[in-house]
Length: 252
Image (cartoon, rainbow, N blue to C red; front, side, top):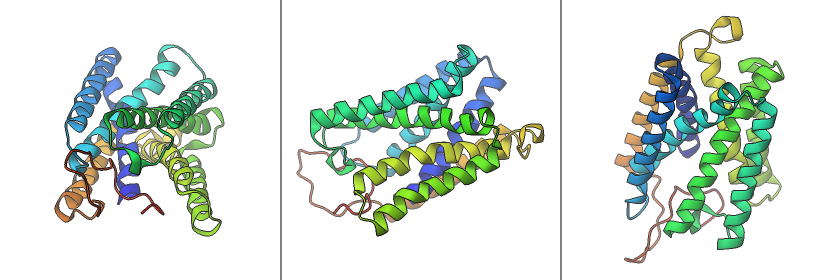
């Protein structure tokens, strides 16, 4: 369910961002996206432990604003996709390096303080921005189109899964590799569904695609809220925060 909803959120963020910047003034759209992003993180940080609704609300808003952040560089500042992809890759690497040297781990199960949670959301924002630029790079600059890009990233996301399952790859590295790749995968699917046929899409429209994936997210998160199947079974000290996310493969 974690990976399914993560993919839904990336697709929803891509379609919502594209719809907003065309439906209203781009500057207003970015401001609204930033406000929603700030509100969602504020709600998330106010929680005493992991809660599905607040966590996925934050992820969804990061998806919208992260897409806008990547698009601003290309559309507003005319930065090529290869350069924006490289820039956000450096940003993400910097976040990971500082996080590692500060806390000694990148495991999501270690996120039990506010500072570690700040590092986590900085990493998430960076993966969304870099993944957006990477998906546009393969689809437009490399001229693969949206369908071929989606297939490419679907295959690539299987690499860390197979490496972890059969080759003994580390769970943390496998998790973050897959996490990064879900962004261009979801974005390519959303663009493939929503963009006009003239640019290799199906022409369903960004607004309808955004709405469809939003409904899928609400239904999926609603299931988690009711079933609590994503809540880790472990003893939590009364004064501490529970780990931020659902189970990570291979980590007890």
